Length: 391
Image 1: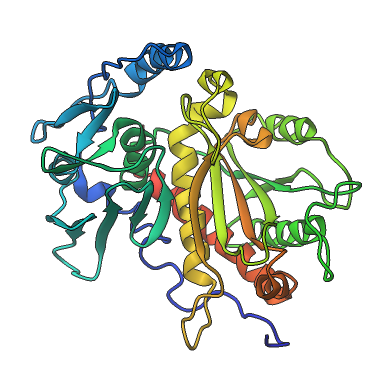
Image 2: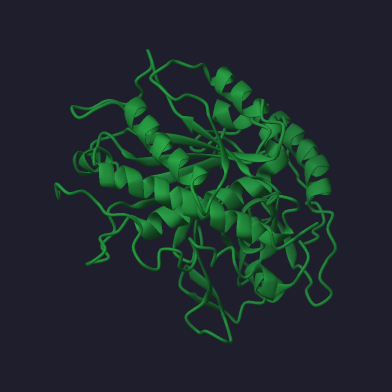
């Protein structure tokens, strides 16, 4: 570990997916959001029956879009759940190629002007992991193989893939100049701890660096902090502070993780859409209820994509380009600070306090500043990407 710490953003930090590549091709694709008919579920289980009824109502509004004239969705019900084929994705989103080798499925789209620019989507049959330009997303349901083709669930297409590939379809999401920063924990709640410090203190340090950057030129945002010192706030108090901002805004909750000694990496959470369980948990009745934060499902995942991707791009050694951390993916969860906030919201876990190497990184001022710079630039990229649609 270098005593001087990690320097700021390297040259070219605004590159590719994190800087908008996975969310930058929307203007070139030039299509409307997909229209899909609702699946016919068949199950006698009471919870599943209730879930299906709710999903029919919700998806009816979410998927009632105009279908592109040059693309028709190939749909299939598998195990009582609606799926679409990857060949439909290829046609609709204008991918140049779709290849499969064993369980690995790859969709590619290259720019005619610059072959180095484009979108690559990697799927694996039987897995919930999806890579878009190298950034990991966790699907609600695994990709499946059926009748010689690969299929992904409609839920994952509409609630994850489409907002990432086509953020310009998210209406009015760019119309904000306020950023609400939530430094997690504080006061009597230190969060995760180790011999070097407490999560609460690290959260606040990153939050303050981020505030300083966002308020400066060329950013010029209005910043609201849920806390600016070591005080305790309930989760509801944090939500209330965020919701006092009546103007359009975004909400970013800063955290650092804990787990087993080998666990490490960056992960970013958005609120689970209705009908999607908290990450790692089974679906329950409360998951069928729409929350305040679900109004911004698409904006949530687009914001998460920009921030998560930018962190992965910038948290590298400038000379060797070796990553300081690992990609644990963009995931969906039902954290209280995400369910009640009326603005597009994400929760970022900036590393593991319980991992010996990452604990030293987290304690490094250079790392803290680079995390803050990455998030600031990601906000700019997000605002630019979703601003393609002025409606």
